[in-house]
Length: 518
Image (cartoon, rainbow, N blue to C red):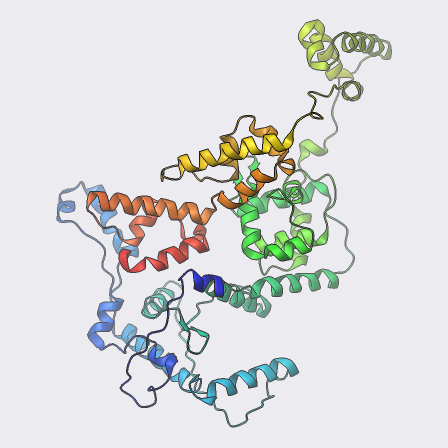
């Protein structure tokens, strides 16, 4: 939790006088907003869409779109909404009466909980006299009637987390967790840990998720491997699913950021999964065409990052259902030819290779027709012959890599300084910095010999969250220059931020500046 708290994401608790004696001297209750009267509740829950008078003069089709704001931007609290708010307010405050950190009740609950976990017995307890004041509530309704939206509006009246430095505790006022479709308790528990990690910056889901998948793999009966082709297609699908595909290209840096968000660097390094280059070579190879097997740990790291909570057996079964690319499995159909004719063309091509030293030069200097004939009639022999006579290009044995590293890192520093003021640039990722360098491909393949460049890229390459914050900052600065004020949803729309793709760092930034854009 410390990293998130140090960034100022979780506000400090501020205590207020309470009018009821049972609520007095309880920091968990005193830190909550005052209990509002009925009119204040209506004002807090009510949401009205924006409207400009001149919109009434617009074309009818445009006015229809303006009216559609009522679908998502309108909320009018009714009597049952107010009743639900009153019950939730009571539940939250009454539940804290028996968990007062200023008295012994809080520590008694902690000791009892610890004993139950240690003994794996829900009835175990150290302090028998401790009574719970927690209440529960069930809300039933058909799908689409507004249950979720009402709860979100009511819970939005409370801070989700508060830090109490005097007691060295962080108070989680509420958590909203969706029940898994199949009602799986393991997945529900993992969803709980994921939500806590998202709010507090903890890492409970990492250890629990890895441990769970590891046990699932050990418990699996012996099964036949899906095969390289099906593994390839599964990982291509996972890349598409998490938004890491650009056409046929897989953006491995996006996947690597998701892995770093789910697993600590120290743990990855201790298990040999962290290399000098990022993303590491094993991850790049995993999302390309599979030509070799990967370790179970490498599979687990990707699974827990891209499909947290899913059973290992389900992922292996899904891999088996993936169709193998027919192009890769289909045998090459060659045109028929007599053996003597093949020998004649082979001799001509070998002579051309001997004269020119390579296939490309031979084709460009009159042997193109021979190459085309062999490609259609004797392709396997042609590929082997060309491979044997491939000449190594260049001579890298005399390059001063240290001098090149210094020269390139100075260039990177100049690029970084020259672009840091430009808020309109695309994301300044590792690839963006490398694209600004001369001979980008050569540098990218030799990063293991350029430690200064690697250090610069690790430190100054822009993450997805930092890029999203930069776009929000640019939009807010433009508002200041034009003298207008945009609401949060307007800023997110202008910056192209979808809720499903907002990075945790961006969420923290929005919470930090929330009072200026709400």
